[in-house]
Structure formats: C-alpha cells, structure tokens
Image (tube, rainbow, N blue to C red; front, side, top):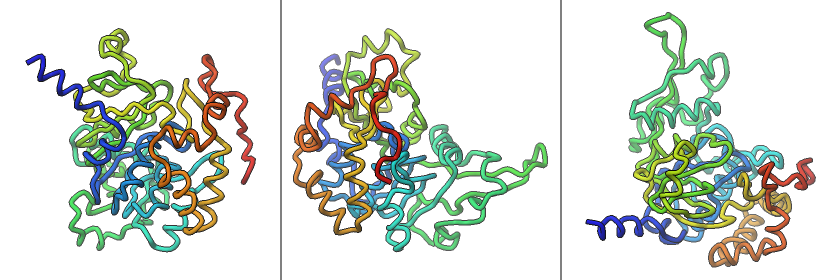
Length: 334
C-alpha cells in the first residue's frame, strides 16, 4: 500500500510539457487563476501554445496577458469572464480587443463579483448563485452570446442563459442568478505546493481557491515544491487541499512577466515588448510568439531570452514589502 501511495504522489509531479499533454486537449474548458498582472500560470500558457491546442474555452475573473496570449495564438474559441486587461499597462488587452472587434471569438462578460460567484457555485456543486450585483447595469441587458445561440448550442457547459433576474420568494426583492461555472481543468500558479498537492498562496488569493474547487482537474504551477509535513505546520495558510490537485509543476519564475507576491514583481520592460507586438496586429504578434514561445524550449531558455539572471535580480521582491519598490508603475509606454 505504501508503494502505491508513493507512486501516486510521484505521478502528480511533472514538467509543463507532460501536464499540458496529459490534461489539456483541443476544446478544453479551462479556468484561469491570477488577476490582471498578478500570478498567472504563464509557463503553462506558453506550453499550451507550443502544443498548438485549439478551440479552448476560457473562464476567469480579471485575466490579462494569459488569456490575451492564448487569443493571439489562435487557441481560443470562447471566453467567459469579467475583464481582460494588463493594468497598469494597457486596458483592455490588445489581442482580446481585436478578436472581439473582428468577431473571431465568442465572448461573454460579467462583473468581477459575478464571475467569482459562478466559480463559487461550481465549487459548491449547485446550479447558480444569487446576487444583487449587476442589477441596474447593462451587464444584465447586453449579452455577448445571445439566448437563441445558447439554446441551440451542443456544448453542455454553455449555460442556456447568461443570467436570470427573479423576484426573491422570501423578500420580494429583485436578485440576479448567475449560472455555475465548472471548467474541465483549472490552472493555478502558487508560491508553494506540497509534494502531494497541498497549495499555499501568499498574499491575495483572488478567486483562485474557487476556480480550483469548481474544476474537474487541477494543475498547479509553483515557485517551489516542499514536503507535505512542512505544509501541515501552518495548515491555516493553505487554500487548496491535496486531493483536488492532479498535477504539480515546479517552475521558478514561471509566472513571468506577471508578479508573484514575496518572490518577484512584474516586468514592465517585457510588457512593453508584448504590448507593442500585440497592438501591431496579428502578423506582428506572430513574430512575438516565434521569438518568445515557439523557438524557446522550456522555461530556462525563456528566462534567458527575457534577460537572464540580471533581469530576474532586478525583479526580485523586497522580503518585507512583498513587491519591488523600484519597479516603474507610471504607465511608461501607453
């Protein structure tokens, strides 16, 4: 029995290539962790692009370069989320905006709270969540995916309605119901993960805990893997239990160019390169992908490409503040 348990633990720890090959297929419905320029699973995003996955459906709250890069690489069929923007640099993200303007992807938007509640419903195993959020706004009346398209769709994960406004049977008040979100795979980047899959996110967790708990499978990329015994010493600091996690990928600096609290800050220089390429159109962005994704074999080569050890040292977070106070935050290239 002990040998079987150890084998199951070892099976969870893998590299990015194996995780994508094993869990991400064409048409996969993916819940993304992170928030704008914070803690996105970027090495897994790049690997999904390298493996040319297509017709993906993305769910999230306020995503950024992660969703935008997948859209720019023609990997995405539909997105359902609140926002795609790389604040403080650009909003909305260029590929996301252009794809919607040109009708290249299906899309639906919610408020941040509404998007989060969809994951909460999925995590609780209930079909919807009630909220007063969005009442009185055009989020209620403007639908990216019309009701008739939803009703005819063969995709059982696409709700028949974006939302519903009902009268509460207890108070008589109007409330909004948002449908549960249940991705096939959640992709989360965390600071620390135990060898069995216990996850610890330092700083703001955003909706990551609910994204993970709503999904059928969970891939966690992390800055470091530690023993489960050490994770149990402060169990109150852990957000995701080991039994929900199917794959663990150790990728130090694997969220670059986004920030990871207590480890490193976001990289304004690389964001400048990315946004210039994305704003330049599809051909321009394809050149970016060729240089920083397709021609790069894994994280080590990527980190060398973006500046190597010298650049990573410049991004290193202050151990007390959790971020780097020397990083420019004044929109230097808008």
